[in-house]
Image 1: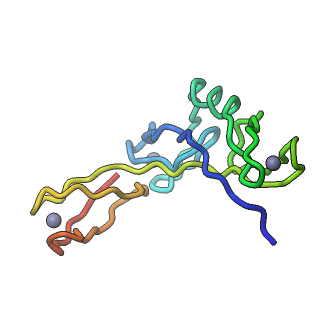
Image 2: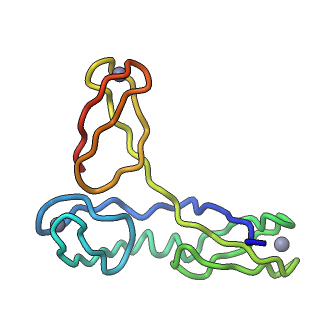
Length: 129
Ligand SMILES: [Zn+2]
Ligand SMILES: [Zn+2]
Ligand SMILES: [Zn+2]
């Protein structure tokens, strides 16, 4: 059986590629731009510190467990019940406004261009990150 999963509350910042200004895949460290292939170094100390010090509740016994690492996902073991669980990275979402009906759509940004369909007015439009 797979260990239960808990989603982190802290999302790494969304950063643009230094070379092509496209959006980089979310993460910290050496990140490869999927649009132009440049290797970009993403560092954000406040996020690293926050990830390191993040406290999450054990999904089994509800004891608070400290992450102790900025790695995500990371397998943690609860000190109280010895239960194992996975602390997953938080997925950043952005709000996009539909150009036709001005409804706000919350989507997960992905580098490059893609087509979205507004659930309200069924209009399709392109977004680029
Ligand atoms: Zn790039
Ligand atoms: Zn526990
Ligand atoms: Zn719409």
